[in-house]
Amino acid sequence: MPTTTVATPVPTPPPEHTGSLPAVTSGSSWAGTPRERAIGRWSARALLVLTVVYSADFVVGFAALGNLHDPLPDPYLAIGEALILVMAPILVALMLAIHACAPNKAKTFTQVALGWMLAAAAFTTTVHVVELSVARHVDPASFPGYRFIFDFQWPSLLYAVDVVAWDVFFGLALLFAVPAFRRRSDTAVRLGLIASGSLCLLGLIGPLTNAIAWRSIGIFGYTLVFAATCVPLARAFRSDADDERASLSRTEQAKARTTRRSHHAVASGDPTGARRP
Image (cartoon, rainbow, N blue to C red):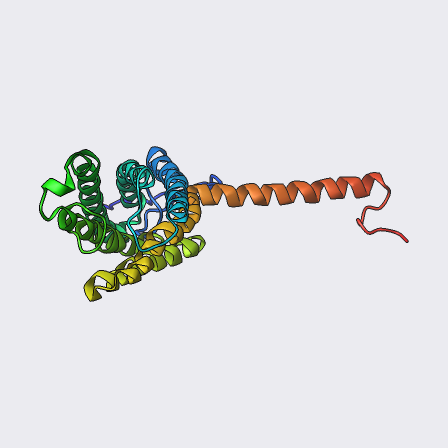
């Protein structure tokens, strides 16, 4: 009777441990290329400086004016408008970097945030280009209704458009960007974005109730609170691999300190490391 020989499978050895962790591909990890993270980091730093200069310009301008009721005069208003024109594309670059580096689970929200930021930048750029190039070359005395179109004193058409840009679009952009910062180390960024975006939206109370002084809530949100948020925001543009390398570096430094203490103890004749009285 013929017999059939069945080959015995040879067990394969388990893969050797290489000492490195597998790549993290979960939808909650911080992504983005080094260049994208650098764009986000430097955009946040630039916005911090520009926002502080913008706020200082308004403080000095109103101090020179002597009251908070009249519109800010030139050259302070012109300087503020020029700073906004510089800030607008940087704000878009910052939000683009946030969208590129956001975890996969948050990209739907950051895409919406990018759209709101594009709208905010487009609206405020249009307003201030018109103010700098058209409004200053029109004689208010020969243009009936000039104040209600060009003047930055409520009520005014261009003023209302700028309120929409900063209190609505900018505020919504910050709030929709919050889900991108899911790491424990990003707590300050989350709280800052929520606070700044919420204050911007609350600033709408002023125009809607014709009590324009209440708009100071929104101004506080998109100037001082946002500037403070840019500090942890710049630090947030690092990858999970960067965090891991930093953690390993700290661990290696701790081991090196322990080794040095041990060698010192042996050299001094005290192998236990304990000090004799």
